[in-house]
Length: 323
Image (cartoon, rainbow, N blue to C red; front, top):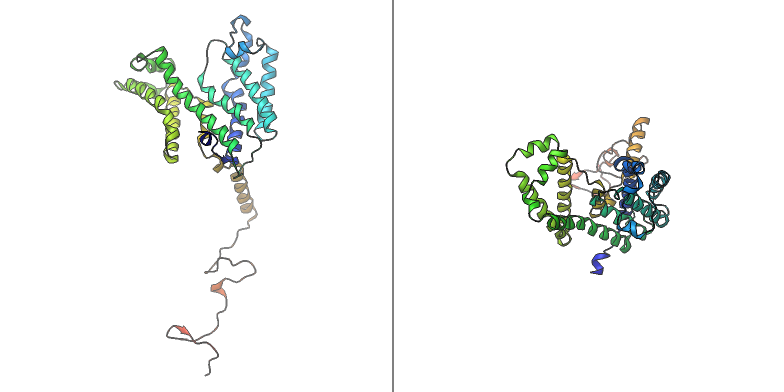
């Protein structure tokens, strides 16, 4: 079990995952959850902190507190994405984002798509330094990614248990998706809703895939990646039909992928080099003949002067030839 939990992975994979997570935290503040800053405009009596907010001595949000968290978290998340001071910046970003989420979810609605992202923020500082493209394997990095993967799958599996707990089989046989389409459905959802019994089949399918999601850990790598692809396609359909994005969860789910193979900085540099070469008009001449190593100081084999050696029966005759 311990070997499975700490299966070593390339440090480059951890570095890529870390950069993606911290960049999303910064984007989350300005794109997905800027409404948290408006929470301070409601009476403080409406603030009902989550359990962790009741256990910790956290103050009631004020305009000054929320503004300070917003700007500090935005700046520190961008700095953490560079990979510098991974432990100091990592723990600080985790603490600030946790408080940001406590404020966001303490007014009556709790989103479960944040769970795996919070787990990722909690474990990434334990890895230490990791550079992009570094092939060195790290058990600490493997543990951080594995724990994040477990959190991703728990989000699915526990969601299914919650459906049974509060709705039983009525969740699968009821009008859950129909109500969601009425409230926030798209034109695509309206077309799907017209197909008889399709929504009921979809509800049973959702329960089935959530309950079976832990199977991903016993699948071969090829099938595991295929299952991750199915997860992403499910959320793509969800966005296209009822406009629920699950963006934090999708970011955390990249812990299953070989992110070290994605090198955007290297790709951009290569493109810039190619464009600069085209702009100066300097193009490497093609190599003719069979000598692929011919350079500026060497003559290609086909262009070199060959010795005049007569052939007899297709074979050269060594030595001088007398007339």
